[in-house]
Length: 69
Image (tube, rainbow, N blue to C red; front, top):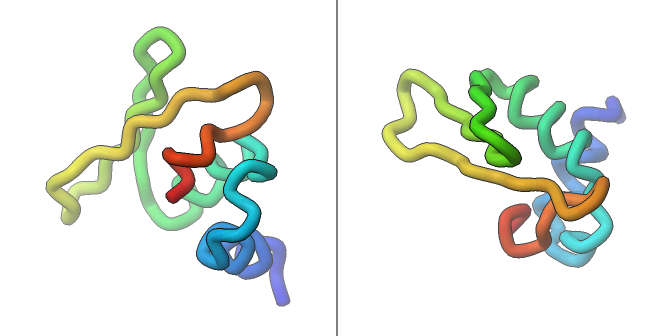
């Protein structure tokens, strides 16, 4: 199983949301085709065929659990 698959399963399990590294979440979004633009501490991810945006901010070096969900 690749690192990408392990990370995806970790996120989709929903049991480890508070332990996801912000950099891991960023890496996953970029691997599945999202583009990022940064405005302050807001990382805004978009994808051409998806209308909604994903707006995430780090909490230290971790991703915010409610944003991982």
